[in-house]
Length: 110
Image 1: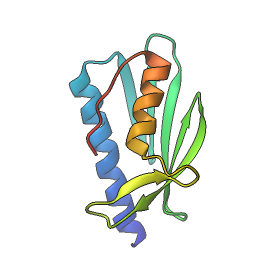
Image 2: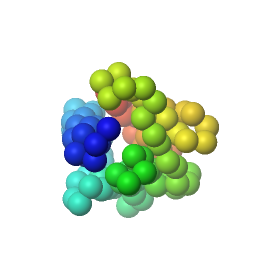
Image 3: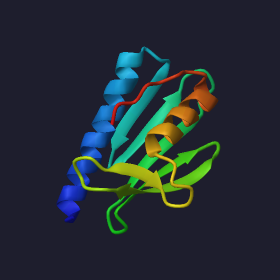
């Protein structure tokens, strides 16, 4: 996968996350700048940060629970972003981080 393909895939993923937050009605704000998506929990000001690492082909998640790296497992159309250590999908870990930090249950669709 080229860097341009990787960046487009991550752009699509981050947009999907933004849409899921908007559709949920959760009390969360987000800002997407310079390849980094910052989700802020209004209730306590804590943040969840997703950043792209094109040189490694990874997405990094930073939350209160720690820092995690994810690689795409499978092809770009049907692949799943999985934790490089535990194999847990990003979709699960992001949902759990939102629930733990904000008390909001978000159903992501990516």
